[in-house]
Image (tube, rainbow, N blue to C red; front, side, top):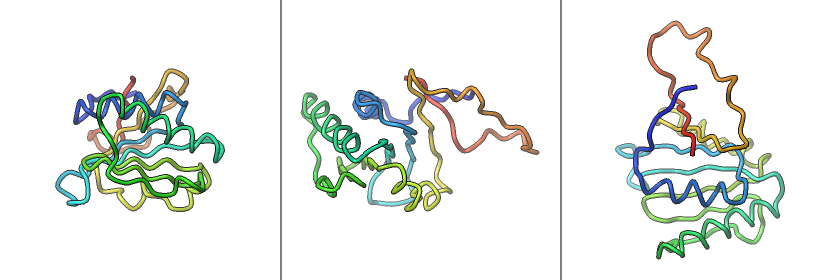
Length: 144
């Protein structure tokens, strides 16, 4: 497992908030220098629309405790894809099948990304087998 520190310490608040409601497959995509929209995407999933809504609500609540409010919230009524725009971080909370359909990770495949592992995640099977290069993979893990 490859470990890397977060590119922005403020991301830790967002990660902890997402993990507070057991968000799955958390991925941070570093978009600095690639777009003016935002610096980072934080993408995570829930197993049901109810969990997706709970994750998004919890992120907003936890960040509000740190006086951080979103500039905008989209999709909160459906529970399939909720977007929370915090300016330098845009959080995408997906119902897992919807996440696979839209594949934001694939759209931003050229950007560096960090796969976040939580206490319940098991990414011990991560390996670089079959990789001919000595270069590190584009996806790193961060244990919170």
